Length: 277
Image (cartoon, rainbow, N blue to C red):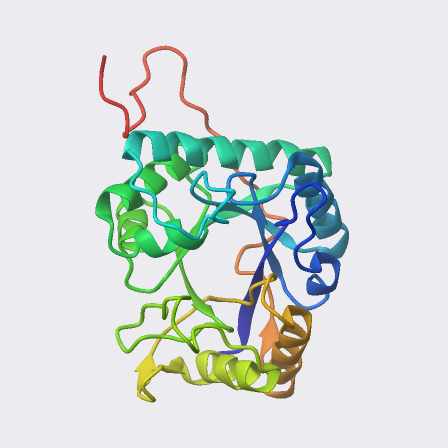
C-alpha cells in the first residue's frame, strides 16, 4: 500500500472540560472526525476545531453518535431507528453549518463509539444511519469496520463504504474490537501502536488479542485523540509509515466538488426511514 489515510476523533472537549490536544494531532493525521455535540463537543468547540482543521488542511468528517453526553456515546442505546436517523441528520447538519462558517466542508461520516460498534451487526440501526446520510448528501462516504452491516448497506444504497482499522485498539479473532471493559483493549505504547499500523498498511493484516493473524484491508486508520499519549502515538505512526515508504493522505479529495441535494418540497418521495402519513 503506497498511501493510507490517518484519522482521529477530535472536537471532544465540552465547555470547561478539555479532552485531547487536537492542534497537535493535526500535525500527524489527514482526516478529522469532528464530534457533533451528541456524545461530546459544544458549538464553540466544534467551530474552533473546524477552524483549526481548515487551517491545517485536514479533511473534516462528521463523528455522529448516540445522544449520550454522560456516557461519552460509548454505551449502546436501544433507540428507535426513526429517531436515530433524525439524530444523525441533525448532527451532520450542525457540523455542516459550523464548518461552513470557517470555510470548511463536511466530506464524510463516521459513527462514534457505541453506535459504531452496534451497527457492525445491528441491521435496523445500520440502515437508519445509511438512510440518514444518503438523505443529507449521497456523496458522503461512511467509515466503518470491514464486514460490518453499515458498510454492506451503504454499498447497497450507492454510498461509498470506507473500511477502517484502529491503531490503538486490540482486535478479536473475528475482526471486531475488544471491549474497552477488558484488559488490553486499548494500546498505549507508541512503538507497539506503530508496529500494529505498519502491519495493517503494509501487509493488510492485524495480530489479534489471541496472537493469531487476521487479514484486513483498511482505507483509513484511526488514532483516538482522547487516548493516553495520543499525540505521541500519532507522531510515531506517521514516522513509521514514512520510514516504510508509505505516504499519508486523506481518502477523499478535499478540493473535490460535493453535491448537496435536499429533498424537493413538492412531489418528493418521503425519506426512506419515514412511514407514509
